[in-house]
Image (cartoon, rainbow, N blue to C red; front, side, top):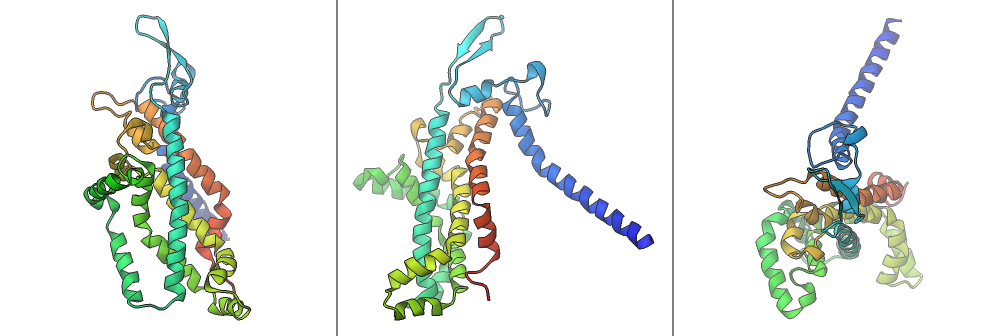
Length: 300
């Protein structure tokens, strides 16, 4: 009887701890959502806006929908969005999805070479990639700026203030993905590909028709992780993209925080908008994410 009571108390304590931990994690998110639905541009206020405090003005502004605003003298004026938030949103989706696809292409082929082929200084190159990944891309901003400026003089489409140029800089951070995919390739027996080669398949055919279908979970993981990191990336994008029509959503959201006036409402609505594709991507690919992180290529 005593053991049963102790077990119930431990179970209740564990549930209380988990509920408190989840509430602690969700509280900042709920605050941002509340600010986006609260009238005015104040950071502090009720967690659940109600009555006169509730307003859709920030969301209408973000979505480009005209709305009415009551002035200090009681007059009503129609306000139209002056910043292209939806253009920034599209830019973010375009850059993040295209760069993630290119990351899969480059990291997948490089991982195959490291996992299946023998060449000079293979181990040294692998370790060097891991060491380079330790240093964040922010530390190379000056070098990246100079390189893109130089490239832009010969190939303007890959220079500064271009989305392909920004994607090019993102491709420099694929070392960790190469390690992830290589580790997954190592769990797939080489004998499967050797059997295909005995039947007449080339290296490329064995890679495309045998290895790639079996490695779909890890490629889904890499795409999701890179998409999440790139769609919210700010430091590099703020340096490469220099005009308003080229900005991504992360860079554009920062423009609402002036030194003289912080437009918290519009900033919060933009922040919530940027989280929607991440949530949709995670929910859609959740099955692949779990299987890619917890299982190998084949099971014994």
